[in-house]
Image (cartoon, rainbow, N blue to C red):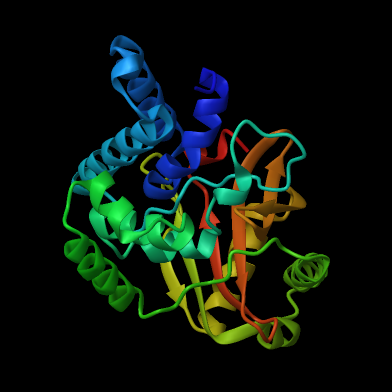
Amino acid sequence: MDDLNVLSKKLFPYAYNILGNIDDCQDVIQDVLIKFNEKQVRSVCNPNAYLIKMVINQAINLKKKNNRERQQKIVLPEPIVTNQGESTIELDEILNYSMFVLLDTLNAKERAVFLLREAFDYGHEEIAEILEISVENSRQVLTRAKRKLKLRKPEIAISSAKDRKYLEKYVSAIRKGDVKTLEHMLSDEVQVLADAGNKLQVIAGQTSGIDNTIKLMTYVYENHQKDLEIKIEEINHQSALLFYRGTTLINCQIFELNPDGKITSIFSVVDPDKLMKI
C-alpha cells in the first residue's frame, strides 16, 4: 500500500470534486486514514479501493450537511492553482471551474455518480459497489444528473496562451472604461457569479447580460480594484485574474470562454477564507 502522503494526494481529487473546499477535503481524508489505520489492514483485500470508497461516502455525507447549513444562495468552490510544477495533489483530476459550478445543481448522490462515471471513468458496477446502490439505480441517477445538467459539460482543458492574451485585453478595457471593446468581448448570455462568504458585506450574487455585466465590473474596478495589482493565473484549468493589495489576495475572478472566444461567465471569489491557500 502507498504511504500516507501518496495516499492523501491520490484521495484528494475524489473529496475535492465532491466538496469544493480544501479544509473539508483534508478533514475527510485525515479522518478516513485514521480510522483505516485503526483497522486490521490484512482484512482489507484492496486498501486503495477501500479508502476511495470511504472518502467518497464521507464526502457525500459532509456535502449534504453543508448544503443543509448553507446560508448563501451562491457558494462558489474554493479555487486551486492548477499550473504548478510541483503539487501535493493530483491536479489533472481536478475539474475545471465551470464544471464545478454546474455540478452544484445536483444533489450529493447525483454529483458522486456523475463524477465517478464521467470524470474518473468508473463502470456502473463499480459505482454501485462504492455507493452501495444497485447497478440500475446508478444508471438512473446518472441519467437524472445529465438531464439536470442539460448535457452542458464544459471541456476540462488547460488554459491557453490565447486565453491569457484575451484577459490582458479585458484588463486593459476595464482600466480604460472601454465599453465598446468590452461589448465585443462578452457573449450575449454572459453572467457574473459572486461569492463573498459570510464575513464581507460586499456586492455578491448573480448578474447577467452584457450591459449589466459591464456596469458591475467597471464599477467594482473603479471603486474597489483600481489600486490593486492584477496577475493572470490558471485556476482550476481556466484563466483567472488575481487582485492583490500588497501580498494579500483580495479577489479571484475565473473566466469561462465559449468556442468563439467570448466570455460567457465570470466567477468572482471574494470570500477571504477561500482565497487563503492560493
